[in-house]
Structures are given as C-alpha cells and as structure tokens.
Amino acid sequence: MIPRKKKRERRGRRSLIARKCRFCEMGLVDIDYKDTGVLRRYLSVRGKMISARFTGTCAKHQRKLSLAIKRGRYMGLLPYIIR
Image 1: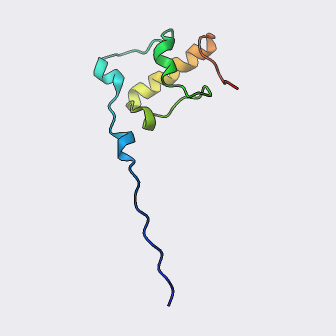
Image 2 (image 1 turned 30 degrees about the horizontal axis):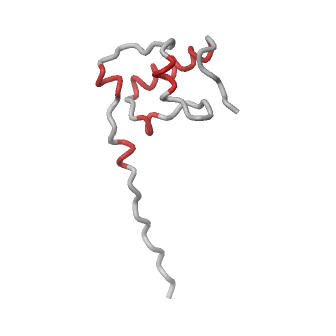
Image 3 (image 1 turned 180 degrees about the vertical axis):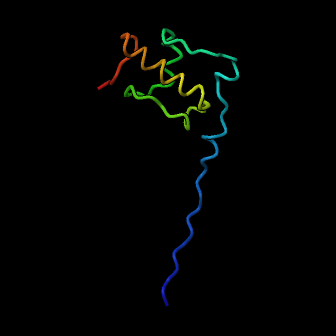
C-alpha cells in the first residue's frame, strides 16, 4: 500500500486580514507626502514599503500611500534603502 499524505492544517492568517483601513476610519481623502511620521509606519526596517495585506489598508488608500512614499523619497524626506 502507498502511504497517504497528511492534510496540512491552515495556519491563522485571518488576523492579518481582519484589520481595518486607518485612513478610511479617520476619513482622510489625501495622504500628504510631507507627513513622514505617518509614512514611516508603512516602511519596514530596511526602508521597503509594507504590503496592504500586513498593514490592513484598503486598495484605494494603498495606492495613494505608495505614491506619497515615492514622492517623499524623491524629495529626500524618506530613505530609499537602509543598509
């Protein structure tokens, strides 16, 4: 007889998705690139953008957030990469 493979149990990924968008809760329409305190929350230790899956932002605000981070990097307010 051929031994059967065990079924993998799903790990708890729901805690990542269950968060709500902070920008929707606050009612913000635009995200300012000059507000580095807010933008740094969405950057990793290395300076990379954290995905919406982990931060909980909606698709609309994730697009605006990425644009604001890119503008802040271009203006020299945020780092591109931290080595």
